[in-house]
Length: 246
Image: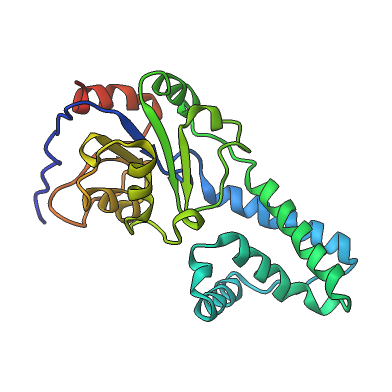
């Protein structure tokens, strides 16, 4: 087995900007989506007045893949993807296109509201409150969560989703847009996220420092240079100061 050496500590000239992923970094996304899916299906069936054949999870993933193959923009436009999935399962219950389009839109809005019912990990909010007084803060997400709907928009200087840059991390779109908005160079930026590829490698590729939120103590096996990591948000401030303090 390889002996991994943790990423050498990089002392920034000064930290000006810290960017964050959202899903699975600030909260657990699996439970959130499961609940949103369950509640939105119940809502849809209540409107239609019939049970809908939703199929299995494998069916869901197959339909999603087929839709994205037909329209590659759905890889980053999760709102439109969700609407098309709703349409796929419910179009047989409508004859009037105008009524159907309105229904799909209402169903999507309901799902989106449910999707924003998240349970933040312990200490996330208190850490963000403190950081917001010292650094520029930004959000870089492949999802469609809205920090304003979550009640934390006031803590961030900007939020960038995949639809904004028409691509997903680890592509450079999110990171480059953050630099454009903040006017902060990559070397003075720190990105924090849970995904080894989308967040850590995506940032590193551009010379951005990265902290890995590793809640489940996963092994780093992508290269021989493991990133600095943490598993509890109560540890974040100390790790930040220790490794990146001025």
